Image (cartoon, rainbow, N blue to C red; front, side, top):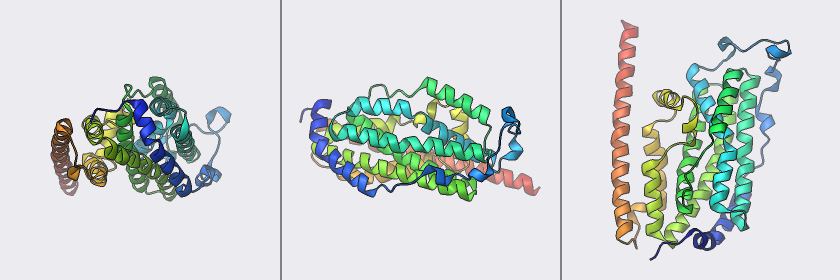
Length: 311
């Protein structure tokens, strides 16, 4: 079967998009971000006669602060994400309606997390604002990915973001932060389900072409927050803390989606599709091996630290 172009794919998948948009609207519960922020803890900063921020004011650990900053700055770049999604999906029909609904829901994530952090003095507001400016000035560029690649990428990315928010909330050991991030994670989960279902329909429509897109996105996957200043160092800190690491990426992101899509049992592939599946199997196996090595190094490091503390 010849590959379908974007116009053909948009038309062929429109009914699936409309069905899943309606399902999403029925499943999405209304929630108010202001109800997740402890406003009574707020006070003025230095410019208004209050106190400038200092680390001792935060009840969060340094790693928890880092994780919240990364999660927030990732959410901050929504204008770039909207541009990329709208470029791929367009403004018409159910595709365009989804883009607007998704953007509206995503928009509340950044400002409620920021409100929480500023009110509780969880992070340095000056550093946070400078990082926000730099991140948004850099912007996110997908490289004009084809439609199926966009759908595959956001399926993995939304699930990864859900897990990152949920694990960050637990790691803070702060009830209000955990409640807030759990609520945000629920949005991300519904978004993942929408995109996952579009990919499922695409696999039924043009299996080899869709599998090629899935394989490419697994092989090249990078979180959208990779452009955040100091992201590499911060990502390592989060991985060492078990908030988001290669083992989580393999076990909780890649593997469940591939299983849900029935990738390994998929029939009707042409030669290129079979090649894509072989590449995907090799990539997943390599990810599993790399994850095992990382976990072993982390455990070895933890054991050495524990031994030094006991000595």
